[in-house]
Amino acid sequence: MNKWVSSMRSATEVFSEWAEQGKDVGMEKGHAAAVGEILTAGISELPTADFHAIDAGCGNGWVVRMLSSMEGCKSAIGVDGAIAMIDRANEIDSGTYIHADLQSWKPEKPVEFVHSMEVLYYLGDIPQFLESVKEHWLQTGGILAFGVDHYHENQSCHNWSEKVGTPMAMFRESEWREMVEVAGFTILQMFRAAPGPDWPGTLAIIARND
Image (tube, rainbow, N blue to C red; front, side, top):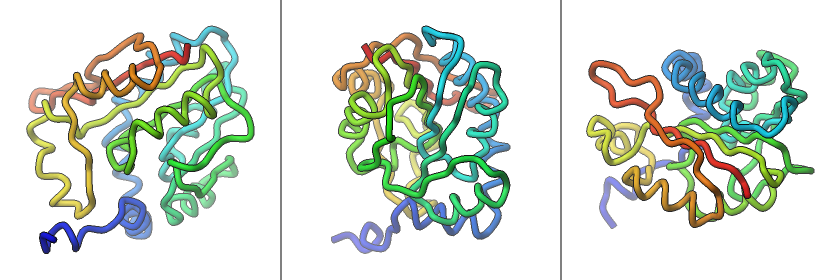
């Protein structure tokens, strides 16, 4: 086995370390603009004004707090595999945060809205996770809204896995679309959120559980 590959760590280990080092604050600052656009787009597609939400890969809970402050949000749960991130979330506020493996965790009951930012490409089996969200996390007609910065068309991200030291799946925009559709979702919106002069933007997908 390649020496570099064998030395890589799990994403949950890396992000727990980041939380302990206080890097979780920077994650919020770096992603807030894109998440704001994704949440606005996703919530606009909800069939009802009131909704319950789950944030998959919640980190220190910053998106859960954003959701909780929104009109119509009746509850928001954060789930993350990095224990130190969950500890940080519980230090910051009294929300509902769950330490669990995203691939195997299931909510007690499905919700209307599921969000995820910068998480899916760390998962070992993305199609399986999407199927689980469809079958167990979301109500029929519910909305999945997620964003990823690590995609093939974003040339600046191609060395991130080596720099961070954890495996990251690389797919083209068309491949992300196909994975979501094969899982049984209907894509309502697909766009690049918060682009900049030297940044292509976050690949955002808003999809309905039909």
